[in-house]
Every structure is written in structure tokens, then in C-alpha cells.
Image (tube, rainbow, N blue to C red; front, side, top):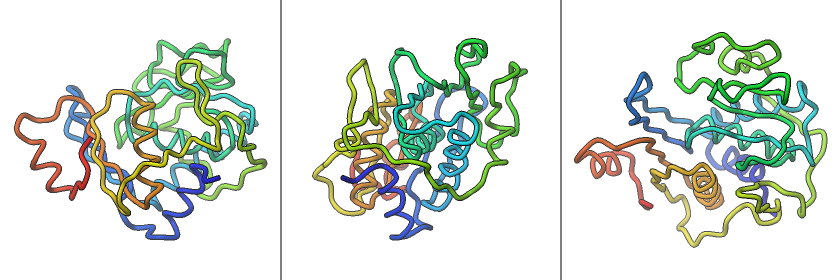
Length: 235
């Protein structure tokens, strides 16, 4: 069984400096024009910090459920890997959960469920609006957690790694077996977080990388972008 943390560990052994996530934000607004590139090492640091927060602050592990209400975004990728690193379930539907991770302040109800408020801009150092007491301001607080992570427990192969529309996917089968070439560099512009997760896992499983475009790509710029990024598979 290869789990998502196994893929991250393999990428760190293979080439920690090679880009594994490249993100373009084409959505109108303050983040428009952002390009973020994460090597395996940098991605691993983000994952470790988030996983340490999940484990240390909320005692999350196998059997816990973390609901992600985030757009397809590089931050959603490291939060998903962090949830899998502690052995919990990434939940993309509206079922009950132990922690909410979202960029939407309107969804945060601190008296109901613990929550993390994610701020999407790359250089943000705090949330743009006041954060309710008891809610983690990710931009302000996540950097304080360690860059190394050690899980307290591991999930069984049958435990749920991902739940979408009430349908669970077990750890034993969450990593797709796509017939993609080794070191593929795949581009996606999906609007669905679940699809992004499956695409990224499939690419990482063959020691590859993912290029994600969020929002309407510039007119006439798609071919140039894919060429500049060395994309070998465009979805």
C-alpha cells in the first residue's frame, strides 16, 4: 500500500529541489497573477507544519475527519497531505467532522467545530479580517510549528482517506494507478478540489509534478504557459 505520505517521502528522496507543484492564479482580485512554485522540500515543510498543528492542537489521527472547504489551490494540497500524514480523513462533503479548514470566514462557527481560517495570498501574514477567538489564523500561526513531523499512529488500509459526496476512498486505494509516464508534468485547470487531489496523487506516484491554473486562463496564453512550464500532459 502506497499512501500519500509515502509519495511525499519518495519525492524527497528522489529530488527534493525539483518543482512538484506550480500554481497560477488567474482569478480576478488581489491574488491575480500569482505564480507559486513548490519543490518537494518546500511542500514537505508546509505539510509538516500543518500536520503538527493537526496533531498537537486537536489530537487528530486515524478516525478523525477534517473537512476542507477550499478552492483548488496549492494551500489545499498541503493541507490534504497534512491530514493524510496524521492518518485522518480528508472530507469534501458536508458530513460531520472534527475540524474545518476553510478560506471562507462566513463558514467559521467556533462554538460548533474547531476551525482553521486559511488566507490564500502567498505573502499574507495574517487574515484580512478579525478571526474569532478559538479559530486558528493560519497565516499568522502556522509558521510557528516545526518543519519535521512524526505521526503518533498510522491508519489501517481500510480506513477512509478521502470522502466525497458520502463515498469514502480507503487508504489502500486513494493513490490512483494512472498509466502516466515517469516524471510526468501534468497541467490541470479543474474547478473541483477532489479532482485536483486525484490528479496530484497520480502525478506524484510516478515521480512527477502538477501545474495548476485557477480561474480563467489568459486569452491566447495557455499554449505559452504549458510550453514554458514543460508540461507533458494537459488534462
